[in-house]
Image 1 (spheres, rainbow, N blue to C red):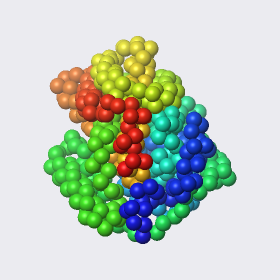
Image 2 (cartoon, helix red, strand yellow; image 1 turned 60 degrees about the horizontal axis):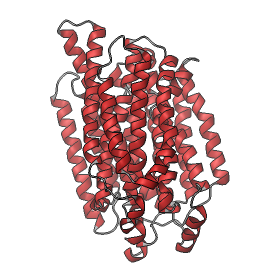
Image 3 (cartoon, rainbow, N blue to C red; image 1 turned 90 degrees about the horizontal axis):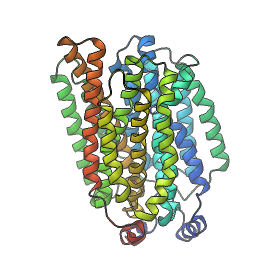
Amino acid sequence: MTTHTEQVNQPPTDLTKPAGAASSARTEQAGRTPLVIKLLVAATFVVILNETIMINAIPRLMADFHIDARAAQWLSTVFMLTMAAVIPVTGWFLHRVSTRTAYAVAMTTFSVGTALAAAAPSFEVLLAARVVQAGGTAVMMPLLMTTLMTVVPENDRGRVMGQVTLAMSCAPALGPAVSGMILHLGSWRLIFAFVLPIAVLVGMAGMRQLENVGETETTPISWISVMLAAGGFGSLVYGLSEIGSGGWTGPALTVTAGVLLIAAFAAYQLRLQQRDMPLLDLRTLRHRTFAVSLLLMTAGFMAFLGSMILLPLYLQDLRGLSELETGLLVMPGGLAMGLLGPQVGKLYDRVGARPLVIPGAIGMVVALAALSRIGSTTPYPVIVAFHVALMICLAAIFTPVFTVGLGDLPSELYSHGSSLLGTLQQVAGAIGTAALIVVLENRSAHLVSAGATQPDGFLGGLQWAFALAALMGVAVVASALLLPAHKPDGAAASGPAHH
């Protein structure tokens, strides 16, 4: 086993090069994006697109399978939950296999899940297929993030991370738009039929060109940790999604069980750290900037992914738009976020995180508050403007936070940091989605029972849900104020090379 002294200058992942090779690679690649990152970004974009691609199809799935909105939204929630359960395992997995093997497993698993979803004869099979898809996606995220932190020099990370934003943030934002266009052509099955050949082609292209970065290492896995994490996060989100469905006792007990299992998972990791074999190394939380970034990202994704499910419901259920029209209306926001990612990354390299994240967080709250005031006749250009403003603000938040958070860690904690970020990002999105759907349904039911019409009740619930998302955004503003004030070039003392 590698000693701690040896690990300090060489991250213990399969993504590492020998010290001399890594140094040489960094020197050669300064100012341009390494091929390995381009390939991983392309693959990650394809797989993460599927996280939100089913949102636009919810009304059609409800009709085809005779299910309600609460059941249908599990097609997105179960995707995020599976990733939250699997991502902690990928840190261990990346230790044991080469870069090419990890990539092959991820893309093959994702493609199998996509094929199964396209042919799903029932809602239960479709849910299972989404779990398989998410298993492949879960490997790609830490693989991309840890590789980036290993091969990209510190003063160029903002620019490259801006390109990664295309995959990490723009893909979920574009999911509803892509699915809207596909649904215009026919069945929801076409969504998976469209994605499958792209995933296969990207997978094959990557395997032809991808090179292994580093050596493998045999490390044990704690299956107790895996079960505690999966049970804890799953119970927490399931309980939250069931609140208000006729009784509070069951959901409250489920949420409590989830919280207790997550606490047990954290305690067990602290115990495993004494033997240098945790599934998720919580020593990452001792690094203040990373801990702040984690808090900020959690609150941001709760509001981001939670609010993303609301707009298609409003446009289709209340305004009567088709899936294609809905997709076209939300597409400008997704494109704005993707196009701005690289520019935000370059700005981060020059000015640091605070000048970007604080205005972005404030703008996010304002945009969500504005969306909470939309009515049944609000002009479509106004809705598009609010949505574009929200996406621009999110672009100003996510790229700097990913970069400054992981950059605060010593190199041996990169893989654990990216796993922790990815895990909480998914759980936060699932909790945000569940919470906003519950608020929407409960408020709507209350207004209808008080005498409001069904459309007016739905609108009232929608406004409350957007208002809750804005409150989540306030936590992002508070966290942003805690970010370090210095620019990246002034952060060398806390950078990985000096730990």
